[in-house]
Image 1 (cartoon, rainbow, N blue to C red):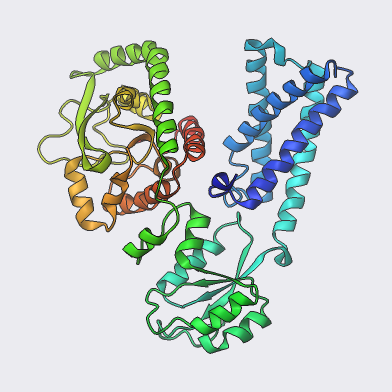
Image 2: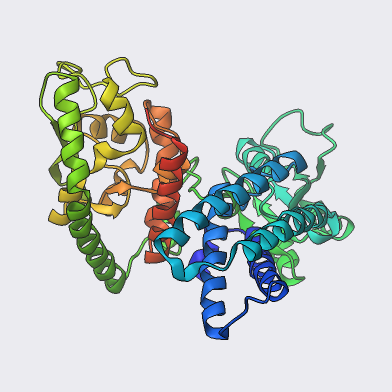
Length: 455
């Protein structure tokens, strides 16, 4: 659970847990009303399976991203969408698995109960979440760009109950004395903590030499106030590493950035089994894709490139060709949004990720994993490593067919995009685990169904 909690907020888990009870409770009440309880063991497994499918539909409609869904209108629309999707999915599953059938009357009654209970619960939950007494009062030490960046991230999210009460002036920026959010100097810290009932202090100093109020911070910590640096809270609320001002010492002494031998073994076994089954099951689809590419445009069916893998090793990656055969001549260039070099079939196979299927062979060979940072071409790696600090650190793990950056960020085509993706890649390298990989795979399906990220 500790691994899972790194990627899901306490508020999101609360919403998920309570709605699990609502869904299963609605099914149980509806079954009781219609007299279809039957064998207790059979009913238990039916309710468990149906609840899991409903929660998956809720998750795929972003109902547990509280930053994305926090307005009442948006909430109601997404609840209706999720309920409709759940009804369709359950109807399809019941045809394939008749043992899950609970009866039309029971299903309709439980659905009606959910359409009333979930919105009412969410509205109550939203009201509680906005109560300032139930959140944490956060004081930020510093007034420079780093401190302001962290403050914007805290203010822009709704998944964590943090409320910024103000800043401590460190003299890093001129003209902050008249800012009402600047509450005082480092020497005033004990008074400010007591007056504003501060629960958490975030140190947002880009340069701490001679500026860190050690005595005041220690006094606050001993009195029960949590004290942490900007990088830690930024990582928690964004799911990425703060690379601005990142020092090698932070990477060295920070927790994580180490996968156990057991994790590596299980991950490799997972890759081999899934790649083998994937190649067998997807072979008819791969044949159909190859035929479509051949009929659509002249050129080879596969497009093979050298990519940089684990520890900087170079391997050959193959994908189904989605661009014209003459799309790139001479110096390599990044693909662009709405790239006119993409063929008609290419556009479809990119959106559906069918162009990635040949990479299952790379996974089986051991060049890649199912989950990891996307492998880049040596030409671009050389450029990016020169322009972006710590870029080569993403090569300490095997590249993946999908990854944390791919499900969290749009398709990238610039150094700025590569820098943003690196923040997510470093977060993955730090927290890699089997549970994290599974959440990324689930999110990948969500991205494919929504068509996000493909160009």
